Length: 573
Image 1: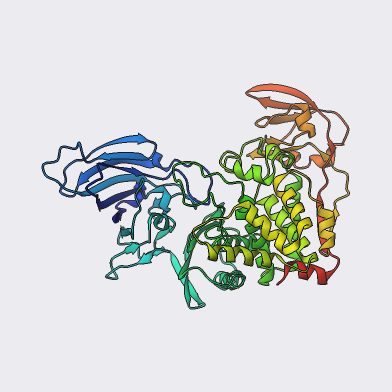
Image 2 (image 1 turned 120 degrees about the vertical axis):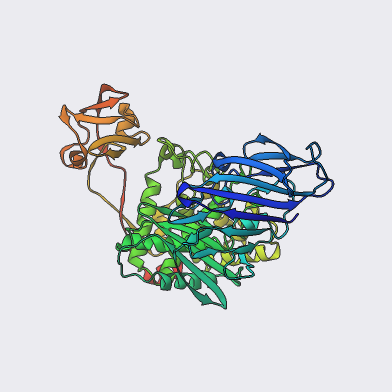
């Protein structure tokens, strides 16, 4: 079926997008079910985008009303057989308005400054119908001068904005940025790479365009081919924002506008760019079998996010090192933080990587006060596991690049079929043998602890731990102004054993008032193994609890190179 989507933004300050969908039904179509997705590929949470639909209308091309009924969240059944039509008209016109005022990479945001349109959140499809070369046209305020998108531009005139895609999946997999944003770009391997920047930045000394170009060259050279004709980076620089979402030939990125002046946070930006760009191969092409074709209305479960995100989380920082955009010392500082985050997650004892992946819909993307104690991030642990796997590869005279080549070859051989875990395991065995495969499967499928010290030592590094004795309460605070509210408590830590709860406000310790500043100094005046009376406000009632600080869990203070030749062989090309 051929469809045309007309997108109209008349008063962006009201955050409303009007969508008109026109097409022609087949004579056998007695009814058509129009749907709006409930989630976005790459972001595994039911977001229920249809909650933003304000009204829905169905007509023929000459304006006759077609009967319709909402049959489920986001599904509207349009009845052609029983509608009271004066004459037969197979052409239909579906119109609806949708509210767009949520600025994330997985939602749409429209205001007076710009429009960011995220396909699954506003573009309806038709159930059980294959859309062939759908077209999309845009109408927006004349004050806006630019449109940036990975969709194919088929505009007949410069002042028109008309785009096309192969099918519905490709159509909604290309976000659109409209406004007066800054644009730039570069050529690589004869392919256009477009850059769009929305938001304001403070003066800084970084060359964003040059660094992105370096990343593109490094990542793409890892593979035998580049799978797109052109690529688009859309970036929102907004205070307090961080995130990215991969698409077939583009990515949407968000980063704090205040962070470019800091070297550490700038490296986080570069790793984010590398992460999402690497997804062009790993996830958008190389993928678990369950992730495509998509069921946009229900959860798409997979146990393989250790491949989609774990491998990507390992490679993104490796690429920054290989690009020469960070030093080995800076890279190791990033690994120290990754490892400390993992070691501070009691939930690693309960959830394997497979468990974490399968439960992404209710765990990782819906974190709560107990998340740290009940599960582990497949981004964090997955990245560490692939670090360890690569260390074993190097011992066998191989590298992670050998696995990437096998994964890419598998995709090229069967582009329409995703991977089973057994196929990835077979590749690991082919590269490094049965023993390495056994360790890798154990890391993926069980909660057995990783031999981090041994694996890093074998790769030319030494992990050094902080040996200072520090009193530990086993809780993380949220600060509401000067007030100290417990965000979460660590499993089996002092706060956990004492019965302190997430949401408790710490009022006093031994009757002395506690506010943000003196709480942050608590390591200076508390002693381990000594009892303290902690007064908390719990549900507007004062509660006294005895807390006995213990020694803080082991924390890595440094990772150093002990054998530069082996270390370089482990991480560099």
